Image 1: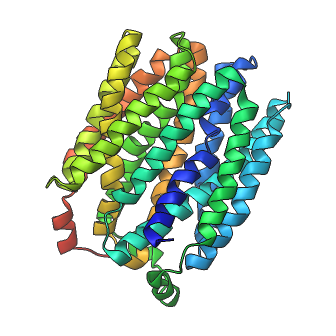
Image 2: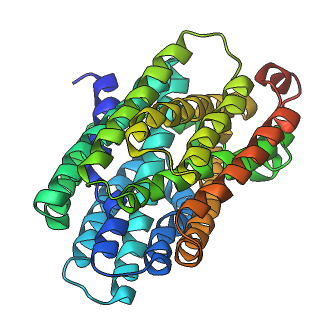
Length: 382
């Protein structure tokens, strides 16, 4: 089995293993919980991920550490997910989501970290691998959206469990990375990383833009239910959005756009989605609107890791990924929690007014403070 295939397989099957996460809010909504309650549960995922990431960073001891995390936490996520079935207590569900989210933090960041290091080591294009995560997300939600209406949440958990087992098998087949062996001898320098102004500005961008992308996606299925659309529509819109995302990866890999230009354009496309959601765009146009969402996510995902590789040294790539993911998830969690309260008080369309305002701030901030990567390299401080 070729090494490239293993990384692509892991990205694809990882999305199958965590396919139940988008349906937790819908599952709770259908069981009679209000916006504040399922908003609180949804917010646990990014908040717990953020709080767990420092521990993951300590456990991430190169190839061997990642393989151990992938195995242990994969079984934790499956066991926690099954605890949600048949439980009527919101507290018990929150505890189950807590452990599932912590496990998701470990396995998601492990695969991103390993693949980024692999691409740096081999000089390959990261999007050639990350796009398989997008393909897995499409497959997961096409199947999940259909199954939710037909057979319910339990059947989604069955398929997720099978996906997790295959993911563990995929990780067991990966070869050790040479750059990990080098990093074990020369540890990351956290203090020096925190003096890197380009990296700190990038963290603010993560907070404003990348987090809003996740926030909008978290509430997308709830918004569609609010518009009285059946669950299978979420599968179709996911297919369109992520399909355009993959197409955007392909176009960008052959373009000469600077990474700063990509980061500037991303919030514009998310802003279009937020504004039109707020003004209750006719439901038939939601499919077309997913093209804008796909272009936005394609831009930000394509540029994210590549820009990070330009502004930090190789030994700080992994810790940089952990820190940026932690900041992003903390803000996403807080926004998701507030979003649930806003839904109860004002209605779901007003959460998209909030995301629109944040995205305008992201656009302005990126133009003013994010530097082009060639200028960063000339004065790299970490």
